[in-house]
Image (cartoon, rainbow, N blue to C red; front, side, top):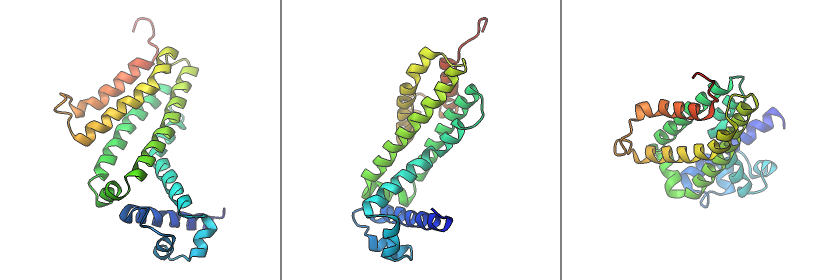
Amino acid sequence: MTAIASKTRERLLDVARQLFASNGVERTTMNDIATASDKGRRTIYTYFKNKKEIYDAVIEREADAIVKRFRDIVCSDMKPVEMLQAYIRTRFEVVDETIKASTTSQFISYITLDHKRLERIRRLAVDKERGLFKSMIDKGVAEGVFDPTQAALIPSIHQMFFHGVDSCHLCDNYEELGVNPASFREEAVEFFTRTLVIQKQGN
């Protein structure tokens, strides 16, 4: 795909995403996307067969955007422990940013008009993140830094742990649970590090 074609495709996806958020998927037509993007219907059908294909591409792109920062960490040249700690801290940052976005009118549109789309994005992002996290852990095991037994358990624990963190952020009930959010982040980093890293004798 040429640079111009790629740019046109991304433009169509940007417009479709905005329309899906504000109007809902069912209420958005191919004509709406064509008009809003200043492109003809013929141009749209050059890139996408139908609205479902656009919808799927938007979901894929949004899920990729969520996990991009995780992928950047896993694909970096950091050492296993440094990578693990950067990953956990970044995961908290992503939670923070997602919750802040929930105060915008666009997010309200997602909730009220397109809950199924939000859920599909979340599920796809979780699937992508699961693979990245496991890849990171496997690398640490291969380098003899992470305990293989703990490594077999930690991916599932990580998923459930952050499912709970997401819920706490949404409900804003850290105080009710007796947790200090300011220190909890580093406590979590310490927990995952101590759980996974093979301790040398004398430590």
